[in-house]
Image 1 (cartoon, helix red, strand yellow):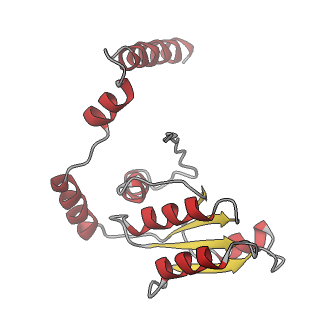
Image 2 (cartoon, one colour):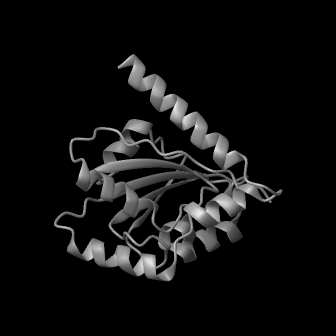
Image 3 (cartoon, one colour):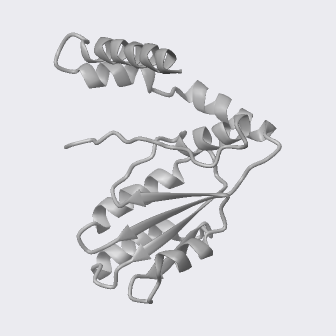
Length: 178
């Protein structure tokens, strides 16, 4: 096992070195274009795959939005609405100090979409009570401002279907700076 781990880590280091050595100042954008860009044809193919799945587990997401993060929280909500896998619910924990115009914008994003469930932070909600309110087979925690790729939830469920005994699925993040 130690030798295999060593070889795997060496291979990983080699692959990472290749990725980081792209020429030019736009190395990250080059990597994204080559490895993480999804075409309209890809999205259509993924949607057809979802239609063939025998199981479509619910995914519960939780995001807390405060007055400082309200604008970024709107982006998170928009990214969830763009998911090609649609069997999800979002628990929005909204601070009472969120300005009224931002509350209105968040409410309009949720309009006519029963997948959004809003609670207010001062309603004495504990983490456990919030988890108990989640109906999903999986629970993901998001930060206001997280923007999920349109296939993020699809990939989660695809992995679950391929490896149904998985107890934990780890996902990393990329930080996009303005």
